[in-house]
Structures are given as structure tokens and as C-alpha cells.
Image (cartoon, rainbow, N blue to C red; front, side, top):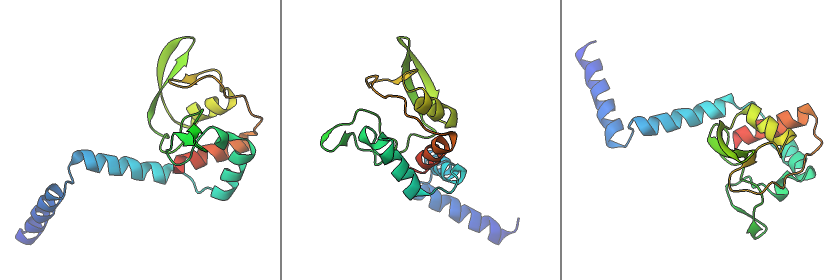
Length: 143
């Protein structure tokens, strides 16, 4: 490495540290970027319409809010949940899961099997085809 390259690397390193570009921020940015890259292209309009038709948006918000039409949401927000850890209650015991495709698929297809901690068991099973479930999951990944 020549002197110019070394000086440039040192300057960039100092700039990153001074701007708060520490490891934690870089990890958060890379995990967010990875999540966005992992999400396939989604027909957002079709996904939202499907979720409205199946009444998902009656209880779940897409924007992180905890209220729907001025009342407390009956289900958790869907914004930012993909890839996070969540605690559910199964037969009275708390279990932690990573929110991934499998978790979401089970939650949609068997909503009473595991209840998200802090919520009541009120979600009814909704008739959805595998393709519809895949569309909803793909959309949730983008939120």
C-alpha cells in the first residue's frame, strides 16, 4: 500500500468514527440493507388489497402505530417485524421466535397456535391460498 492510499484509508476511517459510523450503526445499516435485498419485488397494491379484503388491516397496522381508527389495535403492527425476535405464549409458556417466513406462515395459517405476548387470542383463521400467504409475507418483508 503506498502513502496516498494509506492516507486516504486513514481519512475515511477518521471520518466514519467522527460521524458516528461505529460498528453498531454499521451492523444496523447492513442488516436493514440485507432485509431489503432479501425481500422480493412485491405488488404492493395487490398485497394491500388482499390484506384489506381478508380483514388483516382491521387489527394490524402497517405503519408502526398501535391504534387503528382511534382504538387500540387488536394485533401487533406489521411494520419492521420481519427478522426481529418476538415472544409468544404457547400452552401457557413463553417462547421466543425469530419472525421469518415460517413464523409468519404459521401465524397466518394457525393463528391460535401461538399468541403474541401482550395480545388476546382473537385472530380467526382466514382462508388464504399458499400464493396469497406468500404475497402477504413478501409485503411484510418490505415494511
